Image (cartoon, helix red, strand yellow):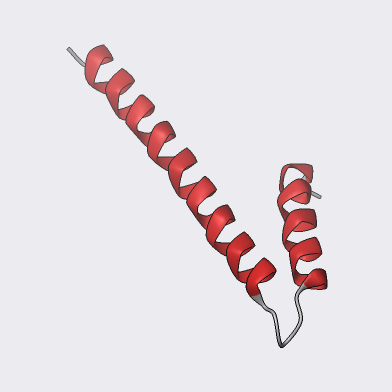
Amino acid sequence: MDYSTVPYAVIASYAGSISTLSDPSPAILTAIALTGFFWLGWLVYSTTVMTSNDVSSH
């Protein structure tokens, strides 16, 4: 089991558990926030790796 995904799964599960059909906003906002967090993390990572690869290739 990959324990690095457990915190995100817990956050998403909790948001889903407090959402209702009449008020789905906790799940929707959490999905948007987690997507943004992962996208931003990937952007920073890829920028850092690309920069370090450009420098080391010269």
